Image (cartoon, rainbow, N blue to C red; front, side, top):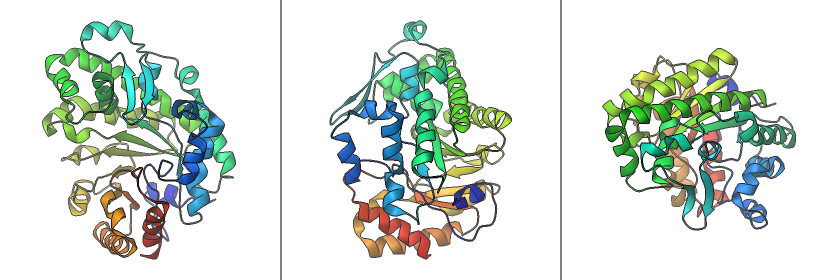
Length: 341
């Protein structure tokens, strides 16, 4: 078994830099489209065998250089477990109905769902993925973070400005805390379930971290993120946790957290991240747009990125995920560049 990424996440000195790619199982792969042409997106998410097939597709294509798979699922499975209806609208992405327009709707939410009953299919997908990949590499589990999930629940889907969800914090602070606390409790149980299914590394995606003023983010959001790591580690101390507070401008609160790895976007300077997180392993952070520039530019950019971060306590990744119109050759170039550095 290739456990390079697990040893690196624990802060050990390793013989090479591990690499995986956010959204590595996705629409840029032709084999993904072969499966999706026969099955709806949410049906794939809820089918452990289909989810596992998509999970291991990148490993089949990029092995042995790829150091991990990440279970194929969606961050919005939690709002669905809380009672919102999740649909995937072609060309417009995921939608949640009814969206949270006022605190009067809070009683309609399921604030304490049975996680193993409502989300157990994700754990089963991890088990199936481990069988398919034959334990060659770890299978990463994940969850959306409380704030990011809250934004989708309020907006009813994606947004350019996230104005409605941001304004909720100011108009309804106590009600916002109630929902965020409930989401946090669910995430903790959800991640523990994924660990019990075989995941040894998990990532918490706070994709919308950069949408709030730093002081508001630290007051409303960071405590819940820190509690997730504390609680999961207290229950399953052997696991390694990654937090991705995308575009967060102050990373210092995470340095004393129970997270092992902090992932940063391309908008975060490597030297700044190292200065603010001296005790953490870092992950990231190449701008995904570089992927369109071709092999030579990818290789040069990756080597410069590694020089900035250093070879120790570092996991190579993009600063966010693969885009649907990218080509598999771009991902291969990125992985090869990391392994040749």
